[in-house]
Structure formats: structure tokens, C-alpha cells
Image 1 (cartoon, helix red, strand yellow):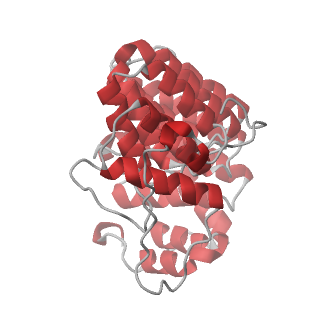
Image 2 (cartoon, one colour):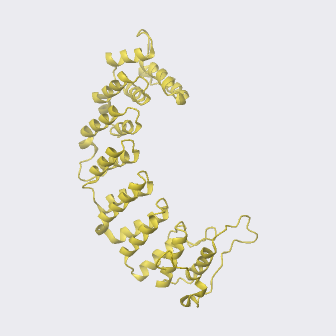
Image 3 (cartoon, rainbow, N blue to C red):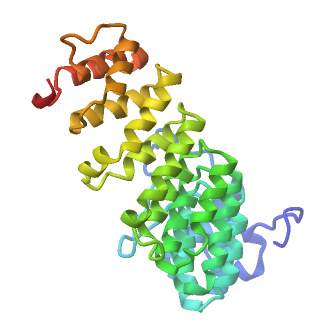
Length: 343
């Protein structure tokens, strides 16, 4: 069938399938809630069961899997050695891979097939599993194509988890790191709230063999995150990113980097209700930050209290109970579980 406009010919009327006896789906005696499949899909699956059970890996079998997948791209995936039935639906994608291997089929054509299916099914994990299998077979020659493919999908849905996961696999397995940081930069310029792009940026600076790792990139990235925070303090992503730059157990560097605490103070000078700034300050205090005069003054000012006999960390917890009221109980718990050395 070359186009959607062509009238579909039932398998039972196709001469090339006249030797096949269809195998109906067995739902067992008295199924409680039988699925109302379309008639065409029922017939296609009946013929598929027949070739599957016969282990027929032929061009017509490959064409049949194309039809079944087009009708229902969500056919289950199957791992080798587990020849089972699930809800009466055989595992078409897996058998298609066996056929492709047996026929030594052109996997570039398979990539085009996958792309057509993905246009309207981009969140179907079976498609991405199959795409990765094909890309792995083809190797580094498809690196650019795979990065372009994921970029196309992300252009339609910037937070498509499957596309991001596939893109990260491509980078690690096939390469293509050269322009990835710039790609993240462009995504964040388009939408600074794109938490997926922030996550990818962190992935790049920590995994790229060309950038030297987190230690080499930290200084620049701290400035980058702080600038994003100053532009929009209520954007949680750069706050999380800033914390992540020190999440390898390097507590001392976090405390000693005055840019971090100063960024919190700069935000709180203009916005005393920014929960992200207060939360980071609380963690800094709990990790051993020695409060400066500016920090103490701002805490007391927002808390509307005098500085006598006041525990700074407890006061920050009280402020968080007010400015982050949905998590008031959590901040109350934090207040009662502060490290002994700061109580």
C-alpha cells in the first residue's frame, strides 16, 4: 500500500497470502472485557500470528509487520528468549528485528520507516527502542542523522523524555559532542525554563570527553547559572543546576564559593519571599557556612525580629514555613532536625 488514499485489500483476498491459515487471538474462555479491535487490525494480527508461529522471516513477513505497526505502533517489545503472548497481542517489533537481520535488510530504509511512524507517535517507547537497535547496527555513520532526528522531535516537544534519552545514548555510543553545549545554549536562550535543556547541559559538562569534566567547567557554569537566577529568581531550574555543580560531595567548595551565598543575598534584597534562595541558604548554613553581617541582617529584616538570642538557621526555617507554605510541615521538620553544631 503506497498511500493512505489507496483502498486496503484484505489479506484473505491477496494471492500471495493464500497459503496462510490465519491464527485467531485466544482470549481464553469467557473474557471479561474483550478489546474492541478494528476489523482490519484483527485480520492483520491473525495473519501475523501464523507467520510468527511458523518463524517465517521473509519479505512478505516484513511487509506484514509494517502494516501491523502502522495500525498499532504500540505493539509490545520482547527480549530475546521470552517467546510469550501478552494480552493476545504478539510482539511485532521484536519479530521485525529478527526478519531484518535474516534478510540483511537496508537499515537506512528502516530508519526512514521509523521516522514516518514517529511523526505521530513520538512518545512510544517501542519506536525508540527499535531506533536505537538500528542505529547501533549502523554505527557512527548515522551520528549526525540521529542528532538531527532528536532535534526535530524536540522542536515539537522540548521535554520528550524518549528523544532526550536517545540523544544521550547517541552521544555516548556514537559521538557528536562537538556542538552539544551550543545546542543546549540555544534551547535555553529560547526558553530559560526548559528544565530538560538544563539537565542536558549538566549531562554534557559532566560526560563530554572534550570539556574536561565538572571540575574544569565549574567556574564558568556557576557564573552562567547565577546569571540565569538573577534574570528570573523564581525559575527553579538554575537553582537546581547550581546545586548540582557541587553535588559530588564537594561540600567545602560550595561553602567557600562566595558567589553562591552572595547570589542568594542579591535575590533576597529585592525579593524576600524567594523560597529557592532561602532553601539554598539554609543548606549552606547546615553545611557549615559562617554567616556574614549582610546575611544576618537580611534574615532578621525579613523575619521582623531583633538579632538577640536568635538562631539563624531556625529563623530561616521559620521564613520558609511562611514563603513556602505548601511545605510548611517539611520546614518545621527541618527546624527540629538541624545539625547540633548550628543549634
